[in-house]
Length: 357
Image (tube, rainbow, N blue to C red; front, side, top):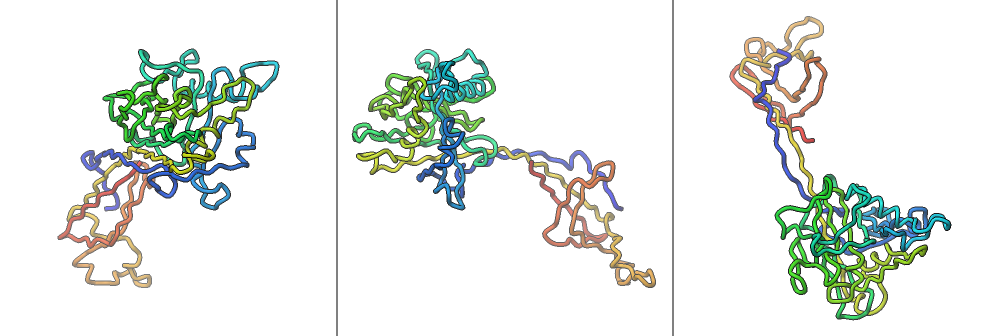
């Protein structure tokens, strides 16, 4: 018997959720941050800043995430055309994420719920590099520490997370899941100032969008003074290169001059998740099946007789490979066994083949 048709009950489908860190070398947290002067001064510099886990000229350097600044009115960026005001790289970034997340060019970003939130014209973006994850970010695992640029110990650090541990369901904008970015850790709010972990006057600190690996940060909330802001000092002046991605980078990397900031260590923790669908195929060889071989090494090339007479009255095979074919006899998949299986009329075999997608 060369082929055996599989029955419907021979197929089982299973789905498993797999989580892992998003950073290079499977590091659970990112605590060193580097940029590239070549990228910063190149054509992409006015749009975003790439952040590496080590010096950008190192052989092991890899982009971990990008930082961008978006402004509805073009503030913080130089106009593309001096005769057309309010259109700059920051306008482009704003429109890109409004289309991607809100799916409506007339909608606004509201930091918090519509009753108490704050609608603003500008925000920061952290976009996780696509190579760092496979399917989506894992809510509840974001822990980001950012530090005030002011050497005032009362401003200190701000610990940000998403609010996935405090809500039953996320908000939805179009097809995108959205969680609020709040003060706290591991998806739970720090309730020192507000029960919901929001800033004092500007709503939540932004949006955590796991399905597009994007985190938006409310610029107004970060610009607030303590205890809920870090006095980030975003530049939103029109037709002016504000270098805002570098301003946020300095707050994340703690490379912001003298004073209290330099004695603190900032970290960025974040995990990804992936649903792996597996097809299990059970290959069954009954006792009266697959006991004869067509392997030419069994037959003498000169006489055409079976070389080992023992197999004449006691036929045996030693399968090492399972091939799966379609109805056109096209080979679709091959499964290799870890060791040969002895098969004869007194033995049956069951091989479980796992196909991951």
